[in-house]
Image (tube, rainbow, N blue to C red; front, side):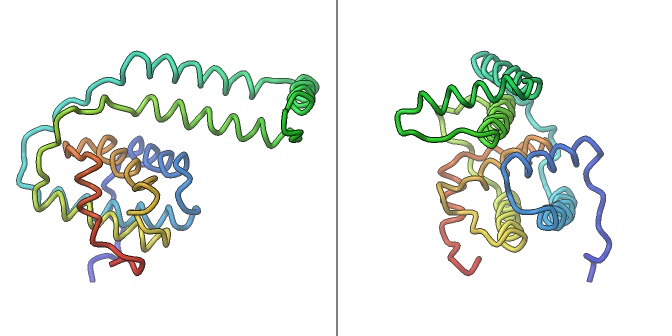
Length: 204
């Protein structure tokens, strides 16, 4: 067996980026994430060793300007919510409760959830890339095998099938890993959907 020693594929920034990605996508618990990252580092090392493409990955396009503006606004909302005094927050919540047409009650959990969603929105806009109008190039056998191994690790670590709920959050996770590690894999939704179409409820 060669998997007793955890490899060190990631540098510190990459490791932090993957941990943040898993957290913001609300995937698994701390232990599941830890095990997934160990498996991911091993498979990335294997992928590097077997990859036949020695060309540097193409530069990633910048997020559209509109996405940048939305991300900045969402980050500003996060900062404003974090610095909101307790008495002013209570006033806002009281006003929301009084004006809700369905008579819903708003408490501090609402503001906390709003802050988390704003953080996720900012992260999504920073990471988003323009959608291609032309299909991505076919995956190589090595690339397809790597994605399938990620899907298997996702199932084993989080006990959730990757090909449910419109492939989310698995699709966002895979594309995030591709970006963080600069793997140069072009993967669109139809390709991923086809790749995972054979999986069933038992994870095979």
